[in-house]
Image 1 (cartoon, helix red, strand yellow):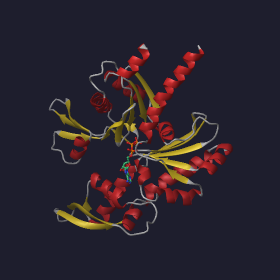
Image 2 (cartoon, protein in one colour):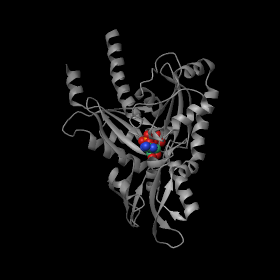
Image 3 (tube, helix red, strand yellow):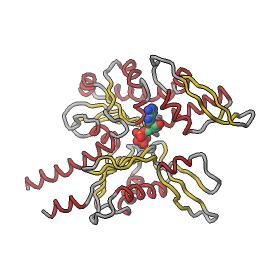
Image 4 (cartoon, helix red, strand yellow):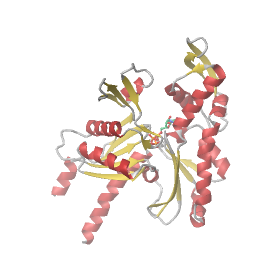
Length: 345
Ligand SMILES: Nc1ncnc2c1ncn2[C@@H]1O[C@H](COP(=O)(O)OP(=O)(O)OP(=O)(O)O)[C@@H](O)[C@H]1O
């Protein structure tokens, strides 16, 4: 009874602490927050830092801040580049998502990049504790993505998940609830954006921001030829004349511009397949490869991977939410496991 009351009052949270986006899921309510992992920080003369804005508001400031304010992405390339700011961001998201009226501290499960160090794990855990968590669990993002995508991870058979985020692409082979093989490469959404910035600079002498590059990628980017040619108008600063200018880019040139990083993702999948134990590789050949993470939404990436590997390739139902949904489910399973062990005792 007490236990049930406790559960009712404390809203457990699942968090996907991504380098591009942080998502929060509350049991029984679904996804309650989905914000860019960006923090705007004001620096004073003595080196002190004050958080001005977090999430969407801070992302709008990227590349648009005056001297003493910086908009930071504290997690880049799948690692925590700025501890202090990551902790402040996590705390802000937890506190704004958690119903302050409920007086029982929540249990929190956090999906973390698979490449982070022991020290970074501790920092994440401490940040969640200082934001009021009662218990903190960490789960690696590829494992959470696989659960969220509905893969039968506890069965004794191989499942391959490819989680393409902002900073890293993680390829993992999971069987019997454990990661049998994993490979993380620092080639994902951000690298595609950078390649677009470089292309526009080199070909047109036009400087565009990362945010604009991301919009081009999402609008007309593709990994494999699409049925129709798409175009998009792009605004930037002319590097020669120094004035703002608009030009039109095509989907073909953008596909060429991002070909190299896209190839890096394909290579990571191929290497993972080569290194997977034969029995499990056989399972993957039957069941196929599942893609998750926002990067999986790049047009025709699934088509390219199918052609390059000769295997079936599927997109998770909601690639951007797979990690947070999987983490939430893991927390529920934890309860179930507890119930089972309690009943057995
Ligand atoms: N429609 C789309 N087409 C191409 N890329 C997209 C699309 N939508 C989102 N993305 C990209 O997906 C990436 C973000 O994905 P996601 O939110 O899964 O990353 P993350 O979990 O925060 O990062 P990481 O896994 O590296 O920690 C960004 O690079 C974004 O530009």
